[in-house]
Image (cartoon, rainbow, N blue to C red; front, side, top):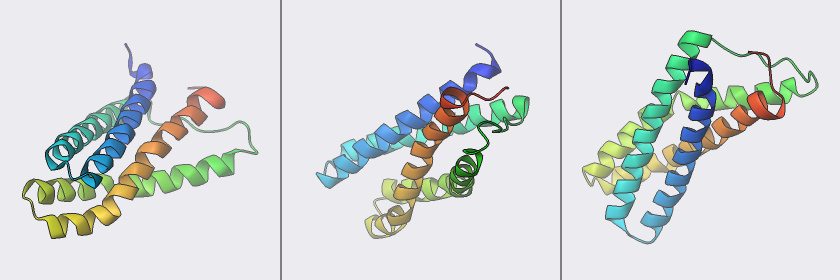
Length: 142
C-alpha cells in the first residue's frame, strides 16, 4: 500500500461513517441508548481515522486538480467547497456532541446534534461522491 491508495481508504472510511451515523440515528429513534452510544463512538473513531489518512495523503500529494471535463468542473467545485466548509466544523461539533452524550447532558446534546448530525452526514456522503467524481467517474491525472 502506498500513499496513492489512501483516496479509496478515505472514501471507505467516509462510507463507513455514513452507515454508522444512519444506524446511530435509528438506534436513538428506538430509544436504544447503549447501542446508540456504541455506534456513535464507532462513527467518531472512524472519522478520526479518516482525518489522519486525509492529512497523510494531502501532506504527501498536496491536491488533485479537477480539470476534465471542463463542463462539470463548476458543479464539482460547488460540491467540494460546500463539503470542505462544512467538514471543518465536524470535529468540533462531533466532539461536543459526543462529550455531552457521554455525560448524559441530554438537553444540550440534542441541541447540538440538531446541527451536528446533518452536517456530519452531509460531509460523509459528499466525501464519497467527491472520491467517485475525482477518481472513478472522471479520473484526473495524479
